[in-house]
Image (cartoon, rainbow, N blue to C red; front, side):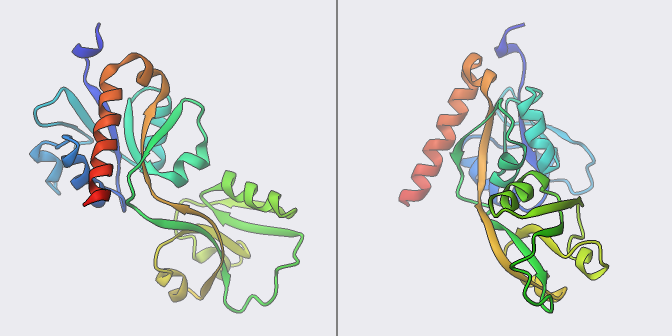
Length: 220
């Protein structure tokens, strides 16, 4: 079966990035069918207007997995996900300049001075980036993997610190936490499967469409 007879699958994330990504996708010619915007729809796969492409809407971490393993040929996801998984078959050629936030360390406001600690327990859904951060500082970190409600971990004694995404810092403040270190700045990226980029010309065309769109937006 030729590539032209198979739909090109484009993975997009649920959550914070999607609202910002949709206008950029439209400028790049990726416009989902009407059902995509139906809040009552439970569908996860959608056609793209005037295209042989299909969209799949999945969790952000799963976007990277689908693309890295070739089940989707392209997608949009935060650079935090790209760096956490570091899949060799994943290529992030375009910074979309949206979805800005940061991956930070936070601890209780009344934690006192913990700067000299040699062993820490940290709650995060980013075990790889958390270990990497503390290894560089010569600190042994035990990472407790959580997928949400990170702010509860210090409150309930599960960990002394958390590593999580921070935008305004309001959620941290409301839960008695303070941001103490920034591990990395984050923005959304167009990602593609490396093999698909080499073998399917539609993937290269998509990359160029997004590159052009981002350049035009920057010049506006």
